Image (cartoon, rainbow, N blue to C red; front, side):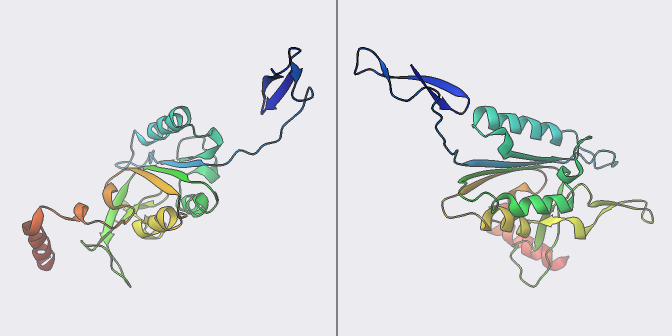
Length: 227
């Protein structure tokens, strides 16, 4: 009997054309192989712990549950699921601050050539601001953005907190990282558990910015002119 070694699993192999069951391979023959990378995921969960009025309870659990779902039910390899959280004990280079998020997003798609299936999930805060030039693409003139864990800044003079616009990541940037960088035959599934989630990838659609038909559009334009 010969043993066909695939990874760490041994399979008995026989030539059944002969009554003596001659082995196909010499014993202990090792077959080299390559595993094709087909699925990669990036999961981001930000609780903003310790920031009064901003702290959330669910993002860390969201990420943990999604990771296990992808591995157990969708056959993702554990090492191909990248996780960034602000959970206590997380290594500094895997905390979802602006610098780390940009670094990981920049290499998420380009860093995995040949991969056809990408999954991205973000659980945390997001907000809107007036769209700035030189080009304007938003129907409602409002630009969406996600808020990294270091973007919430204490402002003693105002007696509260504010978001540092230099530390946010906009919907246009997310589209560049997650959509525009995809190869022709690859696809991205993106899940946002946050405010303004319907427009965070800046995709071509208008339904999220419409109220209800022509009258809703009239009210929106009229209201903008009066503001």
